Image 1 (spheres, rainbow, N blue to C red):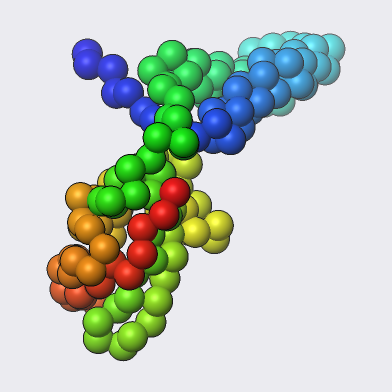
Image 2: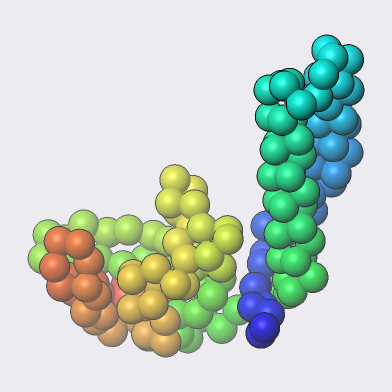
Length: 158
């Protein structure tokens, strides 16, 4: 199986590491406590609480394995080396909808770091894909749920 390499900003990578640490320490301790409490309630063959705690343990361990895999294939992006002549990952791009004149500013990030509320969109999203490689003044025709929309690249920053 080919491992997917993911690119992260320093903040994004730190959040992943913190989440993994939290799950390995507090998460595992909580599950162990739940299993111990359920075990103390008697017959394990008819103990729904024990079964639920064991299921939760399986989900937790799967999440830990997933995060470890992500971190093993994570690469840190050097934000100081972002090329601002074209739109690329980590570019802060301002676009204008040609139809209604609305302007938006987004930072293009990896899929795992995308957060629309904080203005971060994935390079794998329709808008992100459509903007990659564009220069200031270029028009990108992007298929959105509302149909094809034209966006003009107004500014590219880091």
